Length: 89
Image (cartoon, rainbow, N blue to C red; front, side):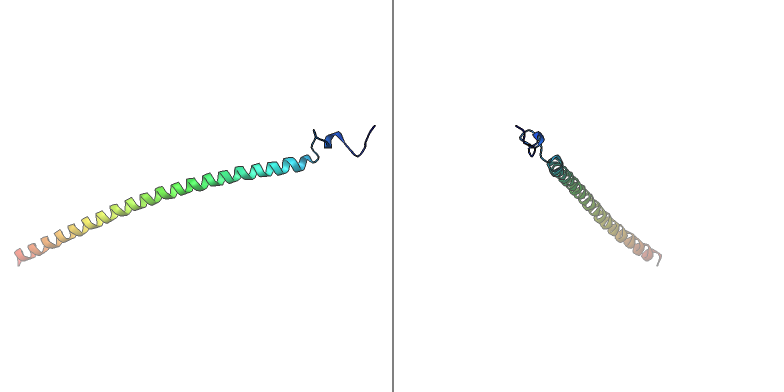
């Protein structure tokens, strides 16, 4: 007995719609992989930003230190100039 409306491919062993099954599963897997890649990229970018911020803070600290040293040197030069002026005058 044959039932034409039932095909062996659409029963338990086969897939009724291969495009839908593989497409939706493939899309889900592809989306999950892409999201995972984006999360890794974001985490790497955050780490890069943390490193740059730490470097910027270190450079700012060094700049402040050099500026303070320059102020000290300027005061020293000013004092020497005044002393030299007094000796000549």
